[in-house]
Length: 518
Image (cartoon, rainbow, N blue to C red):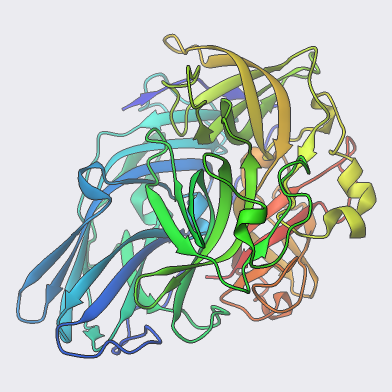
């Protein structure tokens, strides 16, 4: 394995220790929708992740999934080839709060299944080393209190043993246990993707989960799926770039579909619920929340344009370091890529790669992607701490930002790629923390991942926005019906805007679009 560029942090950080789990399979369809005849059932698969390992602040964990195989009780195997021969690339850190759609098998017979096998390959990990010591089996070593990117040679196809039954359209969730896959022994970090009788890297559960806040006939919510739009009447196809590898999703709008204004306020000035074509057009980049239905189709819950057509080179990533002596320079780990439609500069950049960003002299005022949440109206002071800024005094470790690249220098050896950028847009930080105080609409957490730069004892208020699930400006909940029902002391996964001032005094500092308790 090898480790690329390591970013020194500005503050000595402590470690984290979190754990969580999903319930296992129960017998039954679990799909909320009828399937009809004995060979007409449709079975959909999603992937989630939980239980980050202690002392490692995971920023991204990229892995390719090529297939999912169902084995019936009689021994018959049926394989879902994921996204054709290309497979799908997923970020397991992202899936702590979100779900990734793997595909749907059609014409499945009614009956029991004995196992599910999922094939993984090409794992790449970006993490903060909060162990207090160097991890020495990496080349080069990953020093304490730095962010390192590691490529592992490991591949695997762990087998999940189950006694589930297919008796209608249904869905199965596959839960990847991060702590069981990554093992830190002394100064050595290893990855093992094998299920054993005592250590399960993957387990399975039926969809929808309890307290999924979905209607009958709905299996899961695939959120913030970003890519280039192809629009056909009420159908929207969004395809990710090949270097991102998340594939594509086609979903249908209805009268309940929420349209949100874009961060710049220029692409969707007067969003009208249910009218996709008023805000979204061909060849734009958009973000979509899509409901996975029990028959394998998708319905658009929410959609917003992000970038106009023709698309310009844009990189999204998590801020890993900020130059204390230069208010125009910071570094990020790439978590999403939107190459220009023509003559792209970032064609050799991949998920998890480090990128040094230099703000240009003509940098535009910073933007915030609120996804329809009323942050600007209800928390104007917090909003103003980022919106309209023009230098790194508004930036903080752990924030997720999208930057428009105007020039690019590819990585060389251990030197990270570098770029100039003239646009910075705040997007969604994804992390697991510990619920400290359960309340609604704001709740309190501690033990943020180490790359945020805070001690583990530090507590933060996270604001949620209540109301009917799926309507404008409401936080999506998964596993709980209210943030007041969170279990203190247990992990909670969040996708949120992170906004702080220079003195770290804002409360709340996080504004949640998604809250999931495993």
